Image 1 (cartoon, helix red, strand yellow):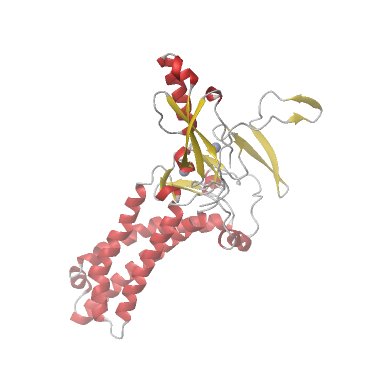
Image 2 (cartoon, protein in one colour):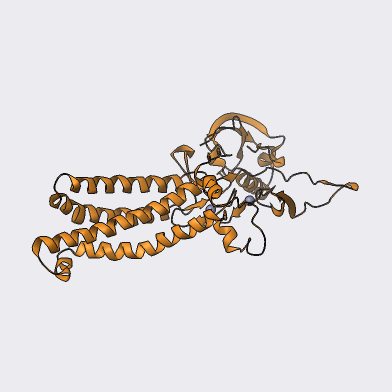
Length: 357
Ligand SMILES: [Zn+2]
Ligand SMILES: [Zn+2]
């Protein structure tokens, strides 16, 4: 965890009572937190409700107008199995959506200060500016890592800064507007499983709508068109799932290709490995193992860590002009990301810092 230090402007301030706040309240990224910092979302998390409605609304139509009718049609409990499997699988898809959307995707905590400039090998003087890039050797291949001005750190290989969430994210894949979260090291597995399972759910609904139409045709000895006319809900679901399959099916196939070649969407879109060797590619089987059979690293952030917020009365704020008081306040707000009273500032001290969400 980063250490939190007192801003220079507040040195010499008069200490007041200590208050304990959770770390997520002083978070500098654009994230939105729920349940006291237990869930972390991107700033566009509202879009996840739209995604949920795109799943739950057709699922409800399927349960009421198709699966319930099939329960009556199929003897021996098979109709109930169709309904139960569908409800359990829909619930499973929604849990995967929450696991993708509400987890730390692999955010690297910001540094409070830039790293020390390195000494040149044949020159003992410090280099005046931090170099913008560094070379790192990965499996014998030289990879450039960039310095992030916002997070004040050299990004590890495959890490990128998400402009929407305003964080550096390990193994950044992309920022997904449908789940309102970055996709990275810690949620890529759930993201892929969500997309793939949604594809299976579409196939399930699509298939059983045709089964229901077939049952009507057989039961009433009628034509396909007449049978379809008797169940407009099935027609709507067949069209809806057909269109959705192009999207989630295409996305599943694309990510299967990415996993098999050990690339991220970000790397693929930037043609990073079109001209040179991919140092992360270990062969199809081991690439799949890396995504699905390795333990997910613990988060580097403890959003629920307790910070001691010591109320301080700035000497400047007591005797200076409104303009300077206001300037100090803006500095403090930038530092802490929270509101202050006009003459009273607050300073956090981190008391614990290794636990994970
Ligand atoms: Zn960054
Ligand atoms: Zn993001």
